[in-house]
Amino acid sequence: MDKDGKLKYCQQTSWGTSTRMIGGLVMVHGDQRGLKLPPKVAPIQLVILPIAAHKPGVTEKANELFTALKAAGIRVTLDDRDQSPGWKFNEWEMKGVPIRMEIGPRDIENNACVLVRRDNREKLFVSLDNLAEEIEKALSDVHGALYEKAKNNLVEKTFTAHSYEEFLDIAANHPGFIRAMWCGETECEEKLKDVTGGVKSRCIPFEEEHVSDVCVCCGKPAKHMVVWGRQY
Image 1 (spheres, rainbow, N blue to C red):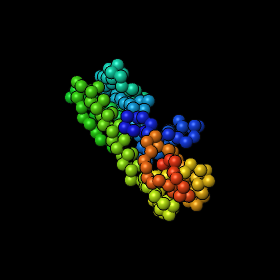
Image 2: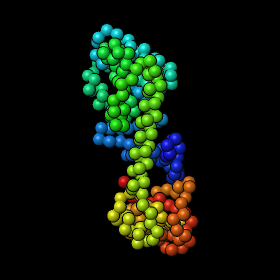
Image 3: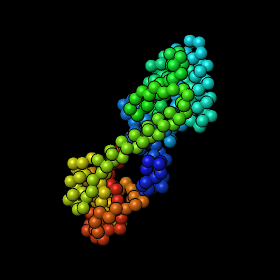
């Protein structure tokens, strides 16, 4: 997908696209703490966590902010369960919610709150006066950071093969994707899969690059530029 959430590549098969998209999202953005959901597709973009909720005014303020942010179009939830803050932090990080908001008695006194980004765990101290705008900016920053990190990772792990020998060398020594030309014949696709121990065609980009004139396997005129890789 591109930075606006649009599909960049097409799948060769018509089944399983949605489940593959979910699997790809988990593999690309997840970490040892759980999911990292891009804000544009996250069912919940922000979770509000009252700190010291038993103290006067905290729960009321959290509910007030929840109502205001929901009205502003942010997909927000309020977690007022009787659990420790640390327990809640861990759970919402595992679920991949892009931003959590912490608000307690001292924050209310200062007319402020703390926003914590899921992608890099950075803490942002913001005023309640323009909270919706600050959250929208933070969501945009999270989305951009996730996109750039994924894009750089893809670029670093994508290689180009101009010949059969180069294809085999990349498949053996450079885990990732291979861009190479293909004649369109099933026999060549099956041969490459067999000799490399599982590297097969993954997709044909909507915008195909012209890597060379001939098929990387048989040397006949090429019809498509294909992205190849192992299926895990």
